[in-house]
Image 1 (spheres, rainbow, N blue to C red):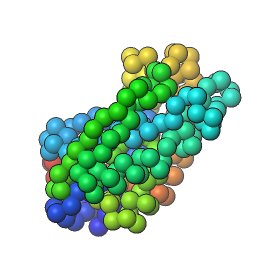
Image 2: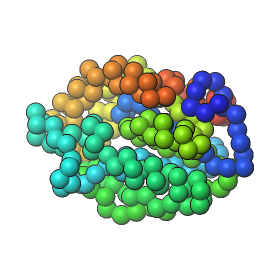
Image 3: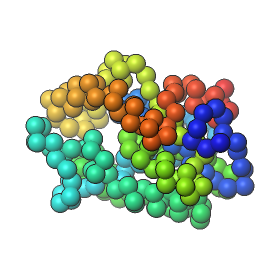
Image 4: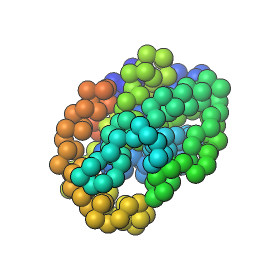
Length: 209
């Protein structure tokens, strides 16, 4: 089964995509890194498909005076889907490299995979791709990675401050807003087809535990 419950059936003659969705700060990138270290599977960082800050179609969060990076329209969904489909079908794809502190792409990355690989696609908007990937037969499984809200809030704020992603007051206000909206966000990801799980459950489902 793909993108549903339990452990999916593996077809090792074709690469397929594992979606790692979830709130910002839930540990999607760390989980993907552990899976890559254990199995060598490629990672597609879907947050690299954010639109540049000067894109005229970028939605804005007027109360903070900044682009609304939590709105799905701040992200190039079609480009992300195309990159994943290209990677599965041809074994390689070029993805942008996005600098969050500059709010723009600054380069590109070449990603390769073998026919037996699972492609780890992680990002805030990753679940938006579930219906299309399932329809095209590219989806292996889809997960919504989650922790208790307080833990996610603390980790997200510490990470964003250490990486100097935005001014501290902006990061704090954004973090509080995300903390309040997290239950609704998780419900929306589940509606799109992501299974809500802790990271250890993903590792177990993918055979790492």
